[in-house]
Image 1 (tube, rainbow, N blue to C red):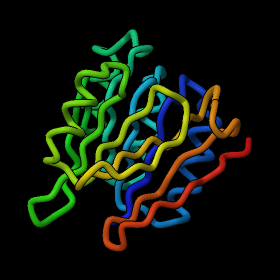
Image 2 (cartoon, rainbow, N blue to C red):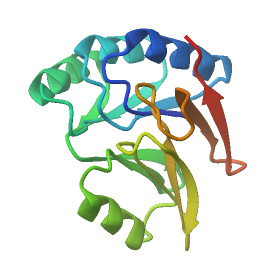
Image 3 (cartoon, rainbow, N blue to C red):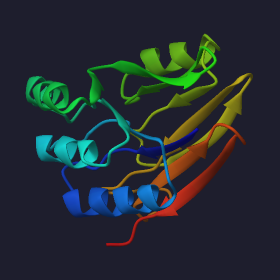
Image 4 (cartoon, rainbow, N blue to C red):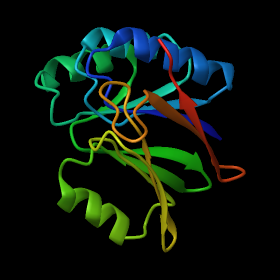
Length: 168
């Protein structure tokens, strides 16, 4: 399964749109936003992709009830803290924003999920910790490492991760 992963768009709709276009070009089957989406209209944009969409709230998402309302109307899976993405054969990817280090640490330590995705740090991460692969796609807004907006595409079939640099 090909999954597009983005985080920390902070209402930068033009960058999110560019990431969506790049992910659709790669024929993703699902998109995961790891938090700090900020703008409810961006949930609409994600819903219009025609693929399964999963959004978790971040620490800068101050209108969580509005985000949840839009997500429910548009058929987008939404959680305020942690959400699971089914990969088939009983396997799941899990996503959280990452600002709560206890939650992120427990998801990794439990070794229950093959993939744990998060945002918050605005830094790319691709690290294997025992049986779990921990992924941070970087940030669409105010990226730190690398200092360019980015997203990622995970192919769970081949267990490969490709970085997308988003230039807008």
